[in-house]
Image (cartoon, rainbow, N blue to C red; front, side, top):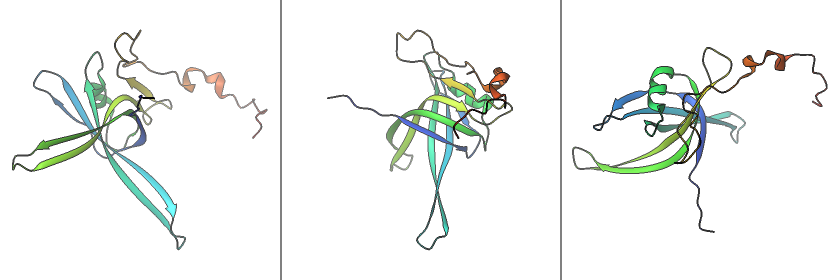
Length: 158
């Protein structure tokens, strides 16, 4: 089998407001800094925690407006779901030093915190030939169907 997969999914909090800029060809790109954390008990029983910081890149391209959406709706502290692929870049800085960067090139962004209880979901278009892109479309949430939250449904096994 010669197929491969480069896919990453993270849920975390924004460490700062999005950095949005325009490229020389008129495109727009947003950079997010997303923190994920994990907790465990150490050998002595004390609580340990480690936070990882992820650089996420959102582009406006091929009908996608993820950079504009990040600029408009995201702010420091917001909880987000990001799906995309990992990319590694190298470049020379002004002093001639080689720099390295690991980034998540986002295909989907879901805002998990905000005014409503449901999150906003935004996606980059699928591969060429896809029927329609969901870019900018709002997913249905429980607030759209209040009867789904009725407490009368007590036949759950747990």
